[in-house]
Image 1 (tube, rainbow, N blue to C red):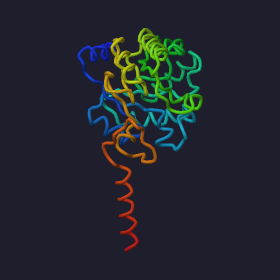
Image 2 (image 1 turned 90 degrees about the horizontal axis):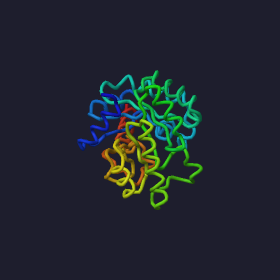
Image 3 (image 1 turned 135 degrees about the vertical axis):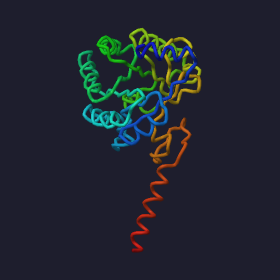
Length: 252
């Protein structure tokens, strides 16, 4: 059974897809041991690890570096790697980028865009590389958009997103991420396609959920998206441990 068939079957059975991000070996290994379906080497590494303002500064070399680290820690989850901005401007470039990430240890790749990137998606899928789609809010376009805005609030936007979702499904995507999509639109899309929708900030009616791990565990306290309810406070634990070390050392 190929990935597309596997994930279609999961959706038919009503099994929710679970996905989190990882950018290094220990995080990837811990997440893998936790039973996740998918570990995404996200270009969100730009903000939560590398200190960039957004994902638009992330390079392919950086994605390769972090994909290699994650691959060393994962034994069972599916490793998906993000294709960074300007690494898939043409079908030829997108295929070369996808192959580079697979060589680094990814088992599937993801790029941002629907109908606008069908030729790139088709080039990847036709080569035999599994593909995860990403529509809705596209972080690589955040500067043009003027911020992170909810998509699918109007009928026109909702219809465009549905068109995108159906297009990437026909092109061979095994799943589609819906980022910051109005919940009612995300529900409508999820019911209209046979591949799983994986939501982030798009309500509870998607076929699965994905989050940036740093948001989930409170490891990036300077900014937490409104749709995230952290399950831990790792940043504060690190501060407490470091303060204890400083105090103990200074006491001699």
